[in-house]
Image (cartoon, rainbow, N blue to C red; front, top):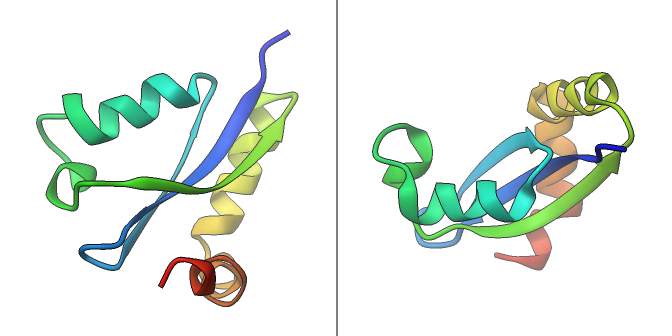
Length: 86
């Protein structure tokens, strides 16, 4: 059975967050920090993983990723997760 992960990365140097979804967190994290040659995550390296949530289906993970990228999700992140890393 595949397991899907919604993750939040944080760049302390720039105060930026990135929310994504994958079924291979370690590989994806390595890509964000070392292998990517373009895109948002390239500009704000290095990243650390500050939050993960596990799901049994891709659909559930995509729904949660979308929630976290919404205004309410960003507010939740700012109030509940980021204080531990600022």
